[in-house]
Image (tube, rainbow, N blue to C red; front, side, top):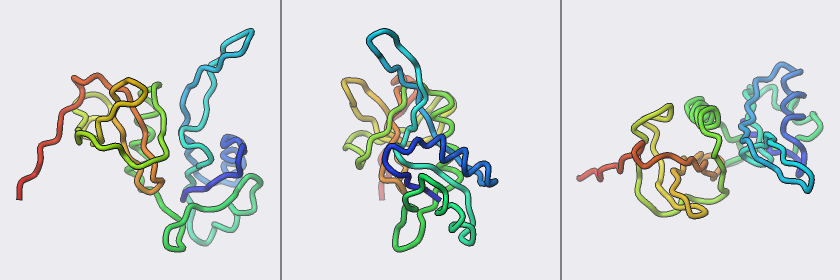
Length: 165
């Protein structure tokens, strides 16, 4: 299930509260350098703002709704959206192995379909796009209508061949 949190509700607090109630959670984070006038600091911030992934059965959803910080479950057709274990593992691989990761809240930009040929993301597919002047691979999380952008050397990706009918 995907929980949407109240604005400015820090995901780690909600994750901790759910873990205390024995729910399995996943909060993908990204290292970001923040600059202040007197110092710089690297902090972990959620990759998908206001989203927290929770493994739950339908009959335990009411327990999640009562926790401070919960806003609503992401829904499609009146039912909570579920993210496959495969997509969760893909997101974990990206956040574990690549520090230069961002998410964009939009559909994928037109570009070449690519397959990653080397590294921990081998065999994943995505779109090659240019974002802020750099070539990146966008890996779509379709249930969230968001994509993760990963910087990869061009030697690690190959254009997918078009299937002919």
